[in-house]
Length: 440
Image 1 (spheres, rainbow, N blue to C red):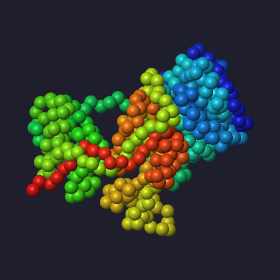
Image 2: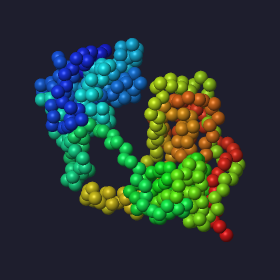
Image 3: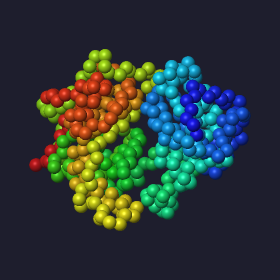
Image 4: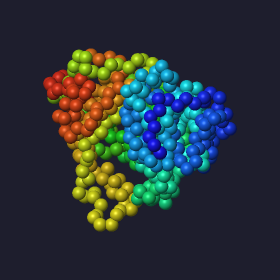
């Protein structure tokens, strides 16, 4: 397929006639037409649909999309991006960010309704039948698997055989249905006798589970430092534990008071319960200590986002690769099975060696969407393993993106200064710490 750069391929989606119910759409079904005159079936060609509403706020996604279209140049596959924008907001962006493949404008969002609101990527065969769905923008590995006939659409939980094929690379997973966020389950109150006593037990939870209501509070699978940080409203770097308790052990914490309580009372009961169970005193202490301070270079920092666009804040971080401790490396020679690799990973992640390696890992990259400077500060604090103070004076919400990967903390801080105009320096500051000490 020859590469095409189209300013916009307008399709009259407002007049579409969709015969299918999107809530029942699945792999193996005919793909809904984009309009009464244009279908997504192209004889001899597969089709990749990207249903991503805004284009003009996604320059990075445009670059990845164009790279993928170029990668599959000359192969029997069409790439179609469906957006909900109008010309007045889109045309200025397209002048600087041309899009390869086809761009379909769908201001009425009829295509999103047809394919299901949870569909981001849709793969369609040359006969117009859906191969599968993806919750994320298309990936080269998935597209190649579709072309090779190695894509498996999974409906629910994969079988053991499917997991093995995904592990060894002989197949690539797609979803059989568009992703749908299930309705939240009603909170389940723990079945323990009501009292002001906090129940603390070693945890067997797979990951962490949080649940609470006005008459109960539950956290399963958490380290003690994380719980003290939560109830104190600080980051984990501002919590100090005795060495005997700072081991990475995970616990279940359950509190069911006799009556409904406000957040302040719940936090106090949890704090008192921790002190009683672990035989420690817990107090706030102000200390002069080494910290990082963020200041801003005037005129170089990103502009705050308009309030109507500052939705759904998130922060992503990347870390320096962590070497697998020698004791947990798989033997050389025969390729390990999926189960062997999973067991080795499980043992490693629960080990003190892995915990120490994680504590020493260096932050190498960061991006933020619709985040305040306090959100950004907290993420930096977790990544730099030291309290971080915001002295930028910047208000509002921002999008941050560091280009490239740092190889050391110093390089990461240099990238923050050069790319975002944020200067992070070491300084002594008075820091409020939460300190737990063994009782005598």
